[in-house]
Amino acid sequence: MGWVRHEEGGKRAMKWTNRAQARLFEVAPGVAHAATRWVAELTRDQEAARNHAAAVDEALREVGLWSKPLSERLSGLHARVAADLHLIRFGAVGHVKSLGRGVTGPAAGAILEAVGGGSGVIFGCTHIGLFHHALIEAGNFASEIMVVTGNQNYSVDVVKRLEMLSGLSIRMERAQTSSAMAIARHLRRGGVVATMLDHYVDTTLSVNAPFFGRAAATPVGIFQIALMTKSPIIPVAVVQSGDGWATEFDHAIQAAGTAPVLAGTVNGRIEGMIRRHADQWSNWAVLSKRWSKAREAVEVSSRIAVDATEGKEVVESV
Image 1 (tube, rainbow, N blue to C red):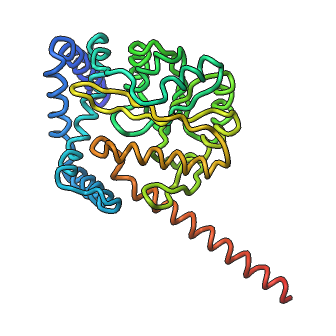
Image 2 (tube, rainbow, N blue to C red):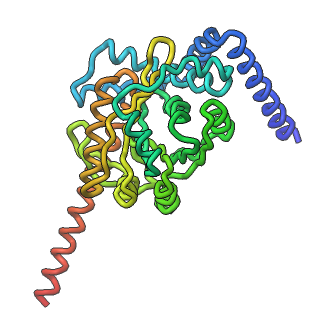
Image 3 (cartoon, helix red, strand yellow):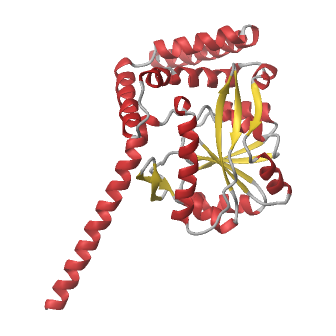
């Protein structure tokens, strides 16, 4: 019983904290945003933070981008993203919208043309900035969007807030093989799909494709679906602009060729965006895991080939 009372008390405290944050973001959004960044950094596990920073520095050195100023800017990225997410959750709608600096990049016309013509479009989102801001801007192009994510703990409250801020109807779909048909049907109806294309999750099939000069595990399913539905892929980044954010839509990549070739093309385009905004990409720490996953896949394939050859030789010698 004591544990139950403690849990209920914790829930009440959390609700009170959320209301307090919401009120603070409404009354003094600038102060609230700065305070959230400070608290996020203060409460972060220091050992985990050191390990994360070491992984970031290692990745930067591997790709030839390391510098002390860049490393220092990236050290504060975790707190900045946490504060941005809190702003979306609790900030007054008008204030959050006022921080949007609109759409930049060459693809805005292509999006309107594709959606207007009834063709499906895939937004290849990235961890450059907080992609939630791109969803808010997507309300200018569509009335409905399917978000394909590997995050199992996606907050319903955040989805509702994004719908309020964007005017979109947002449908969440888990990034897994069994979701392929639902995604394809949505695109064939002329729908818009948004998914993260700068990382890999184990619930999806992968292909090795070049990324920062090395083979990297890359989700292959979305590229197979793009080819099947003839849906263009548009890389997306959310870039800080003053005290707000601008959503950058890169050139549309037409679905053509094979899935591995298309994956390599998209990886190359996203790599270019990351290099332009290296201090705003929050996935540096896991880059080496994608390289390792690709190496493991090659090693497994090599072992299978050797085993198959040896088996054939045994059969022929009998």
